[in-house]
Figure (cartoon, rainbow, N blue to C red):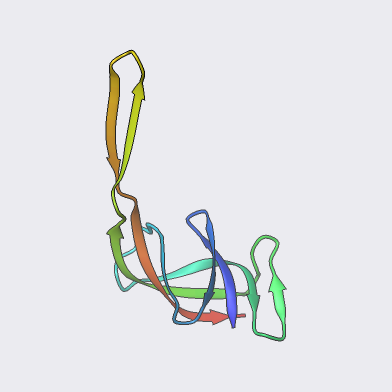
Length: 102
């Protein structure tokens, strides 16, 4: 059984026991999260939502939080002696898919 879920503005194709890194969620480690289900399939029957599937449920557990690698944002204007250097580390949350119900 697999499902397509949406979180953080992105869509993920998941099955049970998958571990994903998604955009940061405001949950504590160990808490359960219900994700929006866009499509669910058990091999024989596939149900697509408009936009979400009614009655379908994907439960995930928060495993960890962290930050991604640093990227450098460097802007300059030629001949003007204008330069700005800025770093950024995108926060993420690691989740494990516990169950998928149709």
